[in-house]
Amino acid sequence: MKILLINTTAHTGGASIACERLMQALIAQGHEVKLLVRDDTRIANKFRFVWERLMLLRDIPYNRVFSIDDGRCGMDLTATPEYKWADVVHLHWINQAMLSVEGIGRLLRRCKQDGKPVVWTMHDIWPATGVCHLPGECTNWQHGCGKCLQLRHPALDDISARTFRRKNAAYAEGEIRFVACSRYLAETAMKSPLLKQHSVTNIANPLDTDFFSPVSANGASAASDGNERQRLGLPQNKRLVLFVAYNVNDENKGFRFVQKAVSRLLMRDTQLKDKIAIVPVGKNATQWIDKFACEVCPKEYVSDRETMRDLYRACDVLVISSQMENLPNTIVEAKACGVPVVAPAVGGIPQMIRHEVDGYLAAPYSTLDQGTAMKDSLAEGLHYVLTHPDYTSLSAAAREDAVATYSEAAVVKRYEELYHL
Image (cartoon, rainbow, N blue to C red; front, side, top):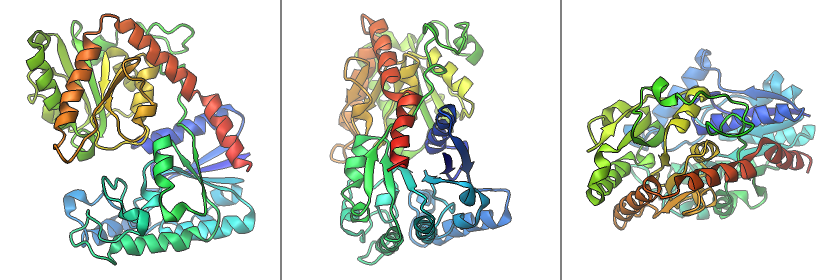
């Protein structure tokens, strides 16, 4: 089977990582696969991207210009040689001038004529809303959008409502087999009128659990000499708390809550101050080097998986503090490396962590208390993992669950069934 995967970028962000892993898994199972991404070397593509963002500045402040997308610009996928080659067209994250709303309609119409299935893996809720990737507590998208709280001037017929109608017209051009990486996202997306005439399936992202493995994992193909901390320049004699984000300052990722949670943790157990270190990884990580009462070892954005695997192996716990998430790759990677995870019970995270078995589910963010409960709960979770009398059991349970749930063969089988419907 010839499968064409479509994603805006090849190596940046969680969606591109998940897409690339699916590609490798499909190839390993004997399929022919091509990946089509936005070619940023072409002037026309750069112009479309910049133009789309400039137009959005009329509706949203500059510092939040990437929080919405109206699908104004994009390429004609049906005119590419990759489209002609493919038996199946599989969309992933196609925002930021990769594929316009009208381009989606054109693609569906052409695929219907050519008998090519269209699968769309949702990495956020955008396919089901008007313009937003993360609606938060807003439910307007369940009724056609309008009065969007993210805009400068919300109105009944604002850009969110107009884009919603454009999507509705585009989706009516053919059949879309939607895939949600978490049960939470699947159940949430199905509340949208946009998806009523289409199917929604829950399939997890695949992971190479031989590569992402603990230092001592039996049978793991990835060798290790156990000197990850030395190579990374991390403390040898401290418990390390890992935080990973493309941009550490991303408001949704909420690293400020980790800062406050660690402050509460050290007030509760003063002896931990000299026994732990925080390892933030991502853009702007160095800005936090003096913002904690304990040692901070920042690492800028990591793009190669070998270094990322070494970071997991070097650390003792992964902490997540997002206000909203779907099915974070970092949780699966960490658990596959035997690292327990402390994270709030939001989005798809509750299906990824077994509370007090291979991690700790903290309270989710709430606007009512401005995240106070989440800070306290994250502190409790970090204390639970870092002082656990049998940390080895937590680590082993994390590894066991990752292998059983996210293996490449199991995930590809689910996709094969979907392609052949």
